Length: 275
Ligand SMILES: C[S@@+](CC[C@H](N)C(=O)[O-])C[C@H]1O[C@@H](n2cnc3c(N)ncnc32)[C@H](O)[C@@H]1O
Image (cartoon, rainbow, N blue to C red):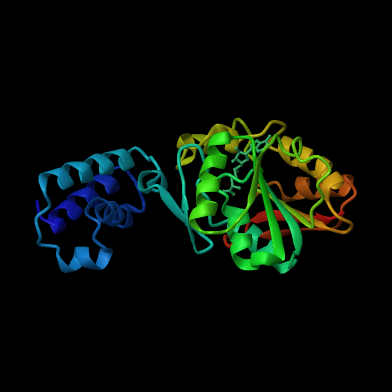
């Protein structure tokens, strides 16, 4: 089968399955299978695929057709200009989280910076790549497997981070930080979105939290106070409809200058305050 024909068939299969990135995904997956860039695929669109390439390509297309995330098939996701390894043990970093990184950079932190629930390491690696030796980067996750992925990304990108397996602050002793950032689980357990898009394929412990999705945010806000240097900020990502409640949690815990910023889609996304 020719490259052009394979791409056409694949796009039809994905469109019929209501995958709204059908064309992009078909190209990405064929590049993945053939090791040819998108430009090369166009330039060589009459070349024949080997039987092995064709079988591999359509098996991946059929996997994608089920909604299985493209990032898990490719094994990576771009975040803040960094190519990060992702696996089924990690949340796939989202563009919305870049809002958190940008706000954190605006505080221009120096010294120890902590990322809670690091997953692939997305947030802390983005901060380390921008702030270099101005910060000492720390990151925790409860998941050993996620930390293995984060550690791989840290080494591959040559961005040193101290990784600690910990239930939020439990293994951090009396360490204090000049900034704490987190994108914790914040989806309500009965949220209908959990059955949609890529969410059914991502680790549930990375997604949901008790008490309307707010329990982990409450725990972090409370415990972070013992680990923030004087006047240092805490920044937390949350759901589009949680801004008011998260501001109330920050304020009840005594944080000052509490505010929420919106993501690129215009939704409340990150709340911060200083202690
Ligand atoms: C929403 S994901 C965020 C991943 C990554 N920071 C990102 O933005 O792509 C939440 C992360 O918190 C971790 N996590 C959940 N409960 C935790 C806990 N009690 N202590 C530490 N990490 C936890 C999960 O394993 C997951 O990696």
